[in-house]
Image 1 (cartoon, one colour):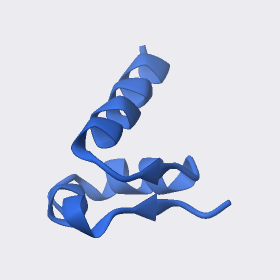
Image 2 (cartoon, helix red, strand yellow; image 1 turned 90 degrees about the vertical axis):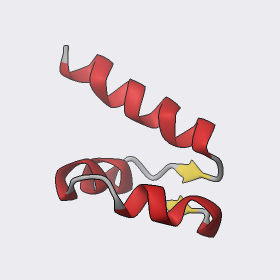
Image 3 (tube, helix red, strand yellow; image 1 turned 180 degrees about the vertical axis):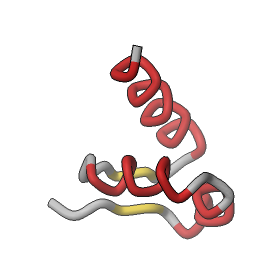
Image 4 (cartoon, helix red, strand yellow; image 1 turned 45 degrees about the vertical axis):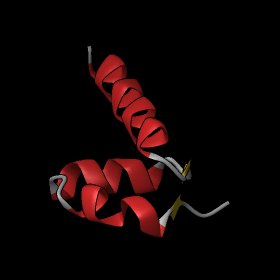
Length: 49
């Protein structure tokens, strides 16, 4: 499965650091809303703890 970032939140995704964007894309996630993006970012934070 390939990652998908919805056009509706593309600007928010693009505002993230290159490292975060890469980490999100590596996860093969479907990010269709701001809530999805927040969930993925929270998951990344928890993994790093």
